[in-house]
Image (cartoon, rainbow, N blue to C red; front, side, top):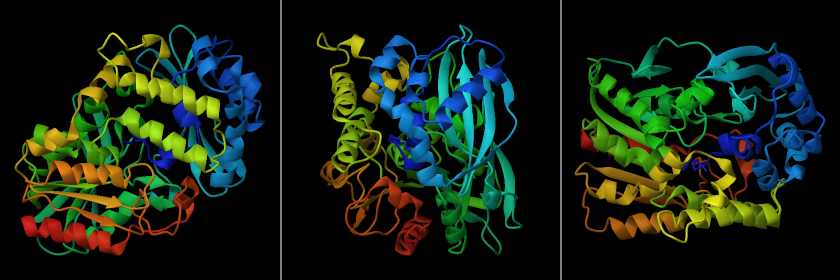
Length: 438
């Protein structure tokens, strides 16, 4: 998961979304002025100037050279910088959050700076724009909805097939990191693409903006957030909402990456799920996936990585395997400074395989054989753990990557920028699985 736990645009937009979830500095001057200064440092690739504002433990974890490479990676991925909008200042659960649209040649992103009550930066991120121009508007075969869990409200879309219902419906669940309702990754809109093509096969879909996109630093309460708060609760709410709509019949969950890992828990919690589709989900903990991903990217020359940095992150990942024992070293911190103790406690305790085994509903794990984020090692673990489950169907696809796009040879993050659709045979397989279960 995401990492997911990470989809490239959420994990690689660019390193910033991953290495900077918690940074620190004194918040001098007006919010807009300070944010403009930090944004300027990023644009001018002044890594050392950014590093001097970081709290000590972050400065030792993140190489200053990484900061200097961020903007070059952004322009390599999204094209030349075009313009920036006005700064918008909000208060979210005690944090001062400053945002602005940043327009590049190929896409528009949201730059976000979050400052806590002590005047320290606790978030610097480039996020997908919540409403990319190509996704703007609701088409005649779509209906705006709001997915609600307690005080959290997430705007979304119900996509209906042509003709008379009721229709089976699939709730689409994101991978890790902030994501919009369309599952936007570079030029691709994975969930919108899937929704359109599943509608052609008589299947409705619900998709919505993820809580971490809509609420930013306010997605959790006082550092207590877990996978449930980040993903599961809202997906459960979407399932429950689907059961109340007369146009819909049986409800399925389709999870991608971390959403696939959590699909068994969503079904377990919701109780009204007819089946789950798990696209590139891993049964292993997030820390193990993160360590393998970084090692893979380093071995293939991914910009912004070096041996010292990767080893430091891998040490913190390995340390989490010792959590709860005397050998666990709290001084190593959490990988990439992502999440809180509550977050990682949940991540290490959650067992996707055993949760799936506890369910009696049909399940369909899918895997791209060229995927480096969740690999065939994970697929084999599913196979080995589910041999006695006759209602579990599994399939792997030789040419596909983590996003279920076709490609050749070694897969690298740049492949996600090619503007390809989800393979048609994957859509056909998912539709056949859902219709078989009606």
